Amino acid sequence: MEPDGLTGKRLASARNEIRVSQRALAAELGVSVRTIQNYEAGRFVPYRHLDKLSRLLRCTPGWLLYGSDRDVDALLARSRQERGRLQLNLERLVELRTRLADNAGRAEASLPAPVTPER
Image 1 (spheres, one colour):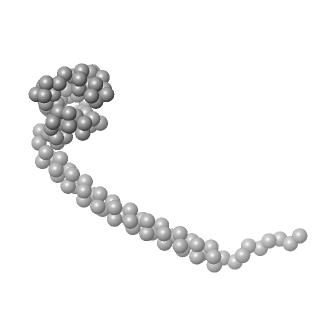
Image 2 (tube, one colour):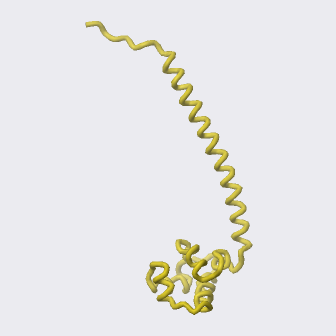
Image 3 (cartoon, one colour):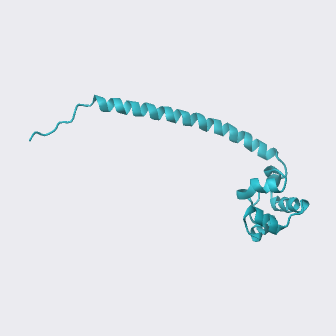
């Protein structure tokens, strides 16, 4: 379902404004005309094609989904913060993996040599 129930109407409006047919838009996206009809009817949200649709229709993804970019800007800001936290966690995990490998190597080196049976 759509974020605000109007994504399909905005998509149809933007498409009509630039005078592009459903068939032409479908061909440009590599989807069927039925898919465009489903998008415009609000049956499906075009997440997969959102970036390309926004370029073709000369609007922003935020406008297509929400009618404004405020929600998208807030989401992008939170995403950037989360990405920073994830990057720090990844760096920490790499550091811990290196330490673990070093410790495992030292532990293996300190073990007595295996005893081989005499023949």
